[in-house]
Amino acid sequence: MTLSSQRTTRPPGRPASATREQVIEYARQAFLSGKRVDIQAIAGQLGLSRASIYRWFGSRDGVLGAVLAGEFETLLTHADTRRRSTGAHRILDVLYRVNCWMSDNEPFRRYFENEPLSGLRILTASDGPVQPLVVGMVRELIIRVEQEDGYHPPLEPALLAYALIRLGEGFLYNDNVAGIRGDVHRLHEVQAALLGIPEAITD
View 1 (cartoon, rainbow, N blue to C red):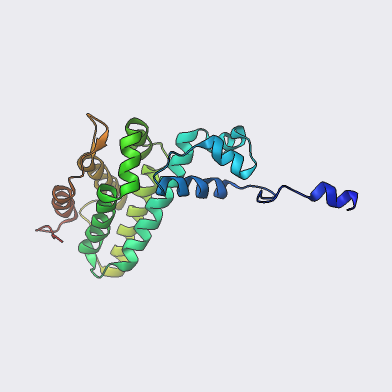
View 2 (tube, rainbow, N blue to C red):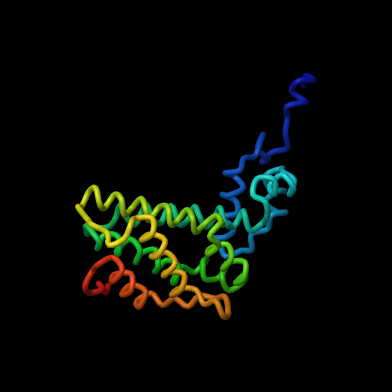
């Protein structure tokens, strides 16, 4: 074995250079399996120091926020591709799928049960990793529905998106005990009214 090959040989299973995306994926795998997201363990699996991960994300909450933001982004995109309705009903259908996921998804519920206070903070902070992204995606959805379906929203898209998401937080999360309240059906009715639909659609 030459000196150059000795220098480039790495322990088996350890990547040559870990990335931010790999940290998110390892954390996502732990989250979806119902395990606690252990930053030290992820750092060891990727051959990083914990300090390196914190330089990327700021804190463990930052890692969890990136995971949850990615889940919401995937869910919103998937929900819009699967919907069959148009106009305001299209927006309502997409939101309903997201609301049901937040209320019923087992890993999400388990995470909230185990870490209620940090979970509430990560999801609802106006300067956090999740809420601004979700509001932005719903705003883009409203604009798409305007352009593609001829929908005329009762409010400016950014304000309407913010109101819809804040309503969701109020009906789905319980601030008093920082847990999941999961009042999906009443939320569905209120979001329908805000979107200008005279009656809520029940599935």
